[in-house]
Image (cartoon, rainbow, N blue to C red; front, side, top):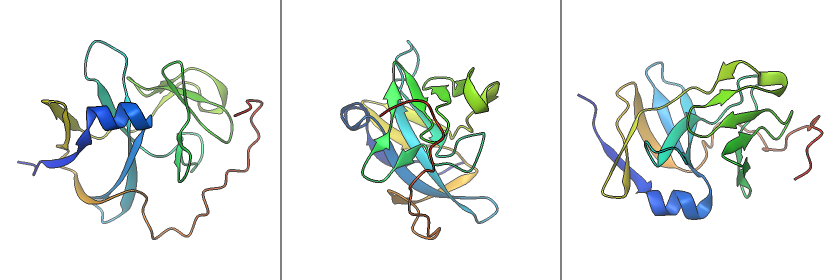
Length: 143
């Protein structure tokens, strides 16, 4: 059975727009995960690996967070938009793909990591990649 780890509150995710944390997967690789508010009637928050399905592009960036418009996470490089609730993209370079999910549970307004295939490492970004988080944008969208 997976060890539950309290991450944050639903209120914090809604207020901040997104919330970032780092896990280690079963292969020993550090992965960033974003929590985003979900407007569907189901879970109020969803968790996705912090990476566009088209390229190795972070969706949540330090100092900015994840750009969310009308219930969709916007890739800062190409402008592909992923549904916050399903992770599915139906447009742009990432069309017909779905973000990789991470299992969480929400109880009494608190968000818990419950995915048995990862281990919680820290709140915030992974510090071992040397990336400056600056996308080389080719998108027609303006932020």
